[in-house]
Length: 79
Image (cartoon, rainbow, N blue to C red):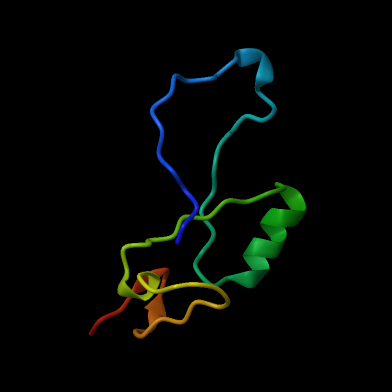
């Protein structure tokens, strides 16, 4: 199973410990490898968002995730 164990604790935030800040964001078109390369080269590290509510995620264990429906612009097409 997943090794996460929820706990109730107090926040350990300390302003002196901040190591990075977000100065903005940009949207890269889904599937555009060239734009992703450009962002990595000029902006630096990137983060992504994944819609994990799709049925394909329910039994995912490892490796490349394969969708049962075609993916278009980052969204599952069901029709």
